[in-house]
Image (cartoon, rainbow, N blue to C red; front, side, top):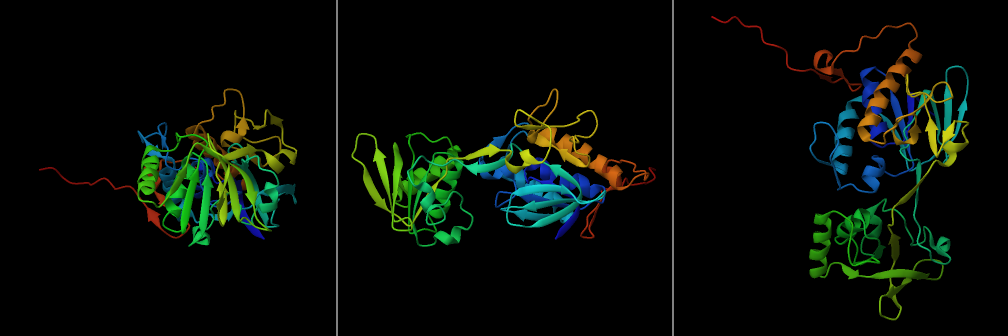
Length: 351
């Protein structure tokens, strides 16, 4: 059983920043996320795309922002349960909540903060007959362990950043990489498109456009895929793995069954105070919540995470006064024993 002060459901930017704000208040956090790595949409959908509305950063790549947030919270030593989905939420007693994942991992916390972005993500699946028969049998919707594809034949379908990035990466891992896209144009980062072009010119990536994968063949596992290319007869390509990367579909999932007040697929919160839901001790921050005037912006999620943590501190420490100071004045004490302080003013006589 995993116990913590605040259990955060969702490892996107809002959930990660909540760890920092909780750490300043000496509260421990543990994060659950259905994806295999932290970062939420930023890491999964567009890691190389620039973001322009983060204060102090005229432009920052989504993946870089995630890396910076992870570095920022490292001193507070959060725990992570990744690749698992929060399924049930129950109140154990007056002090503890219990959340169990789809893999049976039990978490107990004194407060729960739902920071699930737009909800849990399910891969967008191509419309191929009997596709479920090949899932985890050579058909993969995520690249969790690149070494799994070492010296194997891989077909990737898609035209976004994920398809481009993994084609580039696996070109030096797999024995053969084929990238298939239904259009000639790609919607990924320009440098990624150019890298794929270079690898195609070097013969390291086979590119088939405009085309679609229409069938999967194999006896108990993927052995070949059928491709339909504009103006040509359908043909088969032998392969060991087929990886369709068409993005993710957001859904509230099991969170929608927890007794929370839901409005248009979002969780209603009290934005006048602390972003608490209709369940005392359960909060919702970031894109997953709704209230009058709500803006789905990362910086708004940061603000909501800050006020949520202040509320949880008062909940866990009733009657205890906390004086909020700028970190430039108070410094930061990490749970790992580190101490970070701003430079002190120098007192010196001027002759």
